Image (spheres, rainbow, N blue to C red):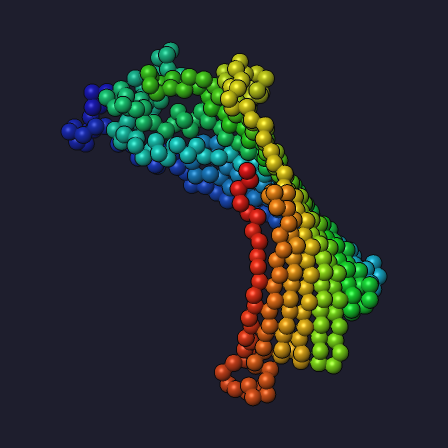
Length: 368
């Protein structure tokens, strides 16, 4: 009360009554706009679209998300036996993350503390502005989230390209079909964390200007090839499939941290402007995983009632000393509802019993 005065309504309580969550939070708007064009002919179809998405964050700081997407898709029938096509999505996004410590600081903040302390106005030792300090009231910490919020900028630039192309050939019409498909997901994330210095009081300060730069690159490629043969003779139906799948996944990271760069604005947010490069925070990391699979499947049914199938996979990966794993499966089924004695039973429209046995592999374990 001595520092900030007494309430004029009730002189027994302080004049300040700060709702810290109301101070740090704001209503956040979302907007989403899309435009698309589709068309085609008997032999070709296409679709082109664009999308803009913008979202404000609820924290009163540089806290927002903006994304722009371009999409395209085309399928082209070259002739009766060959079809080709593909689709592509290009995305460019910028995200400013919230300073999560602000929520914890607001939780512990003192209600009788204002956001700004007019008693500190004009004090040359306080910068960049006169934030209130709970230590001046006898508390151990500053307990004011605004110095952290106003002097932090956590930006990520995210660029992504997702592409898929395929070709399908009917080698023997309605019997033998070959399909090849290539998928590539490529993403880069440029991370920049800027934390500017401030001084409100001893023990409530950030001494150094900090700049963290991190570039991540992800690439995931998959190439699938399948050959499918179908045949029907009388009530007998047979499908035989064979194929291969190749995948290549890679990740690279380059990260560094600098201290004490010029406080002249965004044009100084580069590591070569920093006086000190923190050696322990320099990282150049990456990994690469790739695998090759061969697989086959035979499926037979009689009169769409009695079913029998078997599959076999050979999966190889560079993650283990034992490079290959082999995984068989067999199964059988009976569509009971197709039997004459089950027709018009009034209970089941479709009823099938199925049993199978097989082995599965899993390579989703941490990379060593």
